[in-house]
Image (cartoon, rainbow, N blue to C red):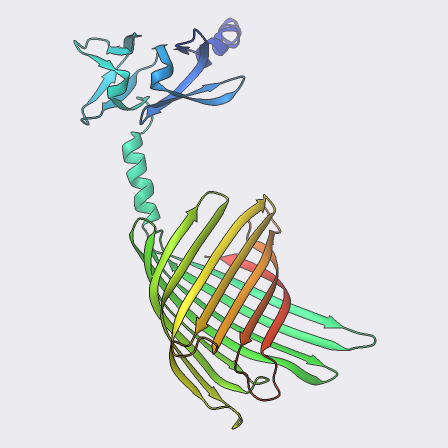
Length: 346
């Protein structure tokens, strides 16, 4: 009983056994988590984790065994004997180290951060499959009876440096027993990062639209992608390359198309709230010899997870295609609103 009481009384002092003195005289008590690339992190009871640059540290003290790595990759283990005037001395060591020389410092009982980082990078480089299955269901009754059904499968295989993306979708909608939407789409994308924010990509899209009298619409593109913004809450990339357009139409009023083109695109995603994200993709594909003959595609949607694991989502968006040379009696703009229930799985 007496032992438990002593543990209760003195445990707070053990938890806050480390001390960091700032150059302005401030003292931080807590648990030193480590020093990485010139910044020391200490966990305190009043402010959580605090990161301090080594230039602002006057002295540190700790009764725990630590490990440190210098900029030249030499490593030392032991207890801190002295850490004042920008110098740190390890007990039973004849050397003192300036804070500016320390690349990593960590609790000796924990994993080496360099090894942990290498393990994380190895995991990140593993090629993995991810899948998403979505269902669209729309309908109305009263003055106008309509019913629509859609299904979409997305699969990706890759890592942080390269990846393959596949999609297959089918949409059918009727109004007063008359089909108003009947289209099938399939696509493959590949991109491979070769230098910092730069990647090269190859993509192809196939489409069959019985209402637009398009037996086959195919586009293939090859070019470069630039990851313009890569932040935690939002990402943006632009792409540009050479493309080829092919259209086989089910009508004699417009000639089939088989022309070289350009592929220009923008991809953007942003986390608006913890429960809401915005995703958008735009594509502009003009013929090289006639920019007035082009295809414009867009898909912009709000995505809301339905559970903590984010396996189930609701995707509400606007998807459309603008064809500057449609079949006679058909509109240039084909625009669809959708509400999709999505299930993500590996």
